[in-house]
Image (tube, rainbow, N blue to C red; front, side, top):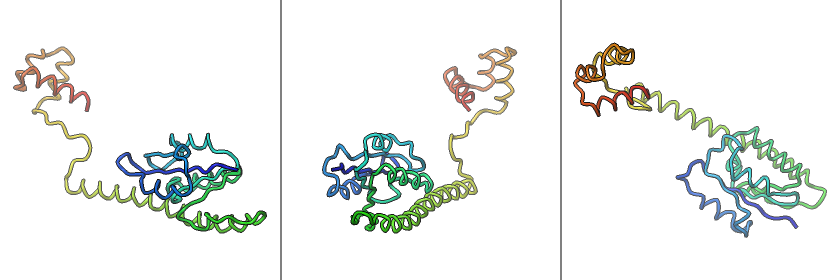
Length: 200
């Protein structure tokens, strides 16, 4: 008899896995067979998921709460679902009741047909949601820029003539002391500004 495995995923470390773990409880009784990730679902190179693939065997069953927990890339999800099927591993998606049904031997094609239709719809929805998130982020950035908000690293405030004197100082044409005096800076402030300027 095969083992029941579970897989749970959220997109960031701040998010909580409890809701998914609660849903898996009645199907996966041993916590050591539940694998988890707290990363984006854009690809399948996730530590928990990859470790689960190494442990699961033919005859085992994998339970997940919803199709988008597996990932958000339609082609990769389909590819892995085909791999599970080829390896003799049953995938049961709690939010898709059809996938949870057991059928008499020899009638697997009925479930496969229904599941393929549902998976096509759900994976498309998961991928669309990911595209929507990216679009909303891009629109938010565009709006912020239009309002004059600076995004990313704060802009460096430097006195007028800094660039020219910095070049001359680096070329050995002026001393550091002369540079500081010209900029009206104390030694500590001066070297902090140099550091920031070079980092930018």
